[in-house]
Length: 273
Image 1 (cartoon, rainbow, N blue to C red):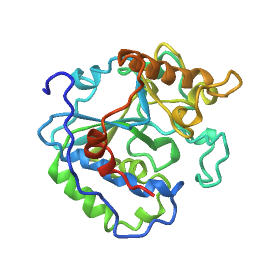
Image 2: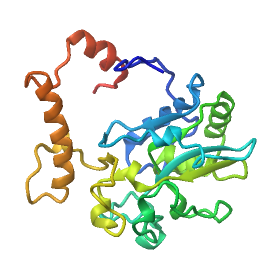
Image 3: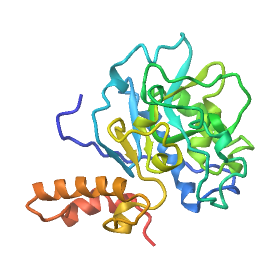
Image 4: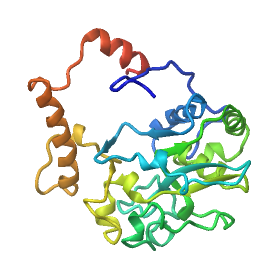
């Protein structure tokens, strides 16, 4: 356990496939492979990989302390993740053509099971690949393993599928962990509550249940303060409320950090244009 409030920053090697990407939904996704380095944190029994465009609203310790949910057979490896919403309501042209509501893993779900860690139904792991089995890698629960990392790197540099992935790391994980020895435990949306879900899948959404909001697409901090007419005004307002709360604890001075801290902890890890 780390002392309360301590953050450990590591220098890691980026991961770039040897093949050239041809199917990316956005060019920036060419950088996301490096997230998989979390599998190298072997000093920990279980790791939660959390994207930086998320807002944790409630405690999620059960993802670390609930053994019954993550029981698996000897020799079997797993990850925990929630579904990708493959409805594509905005009709984004770079998304796959098969991304339609009838192929989305969230479509058949309803409350209360949609928010239950223990009761949520799992897809048939032996079924043929389809969008309904895809995951969103904003939050991934994993067991670090150097052998798994080595196998993934080898696959990333050899599989002919790699250049075709629209969403590289999550498409890869959905494929890599769909074998008899590598499985996905699908988690309720509440741990990766995509901000689009209240409008696209109202049958599963509850404001009070959502524990970790994922600000996919346009970010609240780039759009500015939400206006009442904005489609995601309420959910974006949650982020601004958290921002204001943190700012108030610093005497209203915002979230400014010293130049030295910025250079050591942020700038050196960024590609600046």
